[in-house]
Length: 175
Image (cartoon, rainbow, N blue to C red; front, side, top):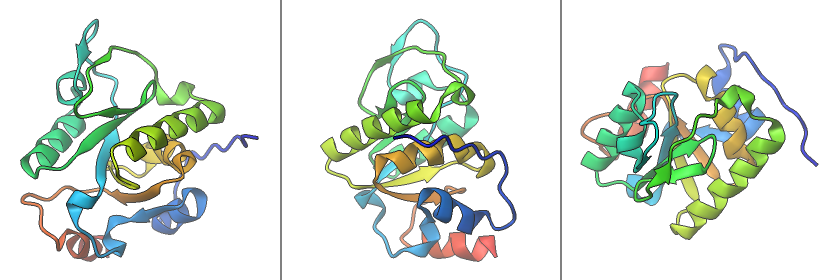
């Protein structure tokens, strides 16, 4: 049974709230090797209409374009969380869609979360890094990712070049 959970605000304690509400941890809280995670960000309204495409050619927001540049420059496997497909992997060419995250019910997010889980496990990962500069704008995706049952790590920043100390840098910047 799906429980409808709607949260419109996060407080100054958002780091603890995303853990308690959705089981999402901060990237800064682990010792990690970046290539051991599937990297993700959220989809966006601006898409190439009427076409099929891979994520970097399909989603045109500055956030997604920066993200794609970052992961490709660092040789990381990635996907875009999608309000239709669950996850649009970097190697997939998928059809155009126009669905806003606000239109998704908890049941929709649960189904999308299961699609995310299936795709991620097929890529041999069991953990995701989710990037989005705004925790508040991430809420629908935190909910979706919660339903995936995977290990979810969140970051609001991307750093060039990628280093193994990224987590420590993020922790220091957030204090």
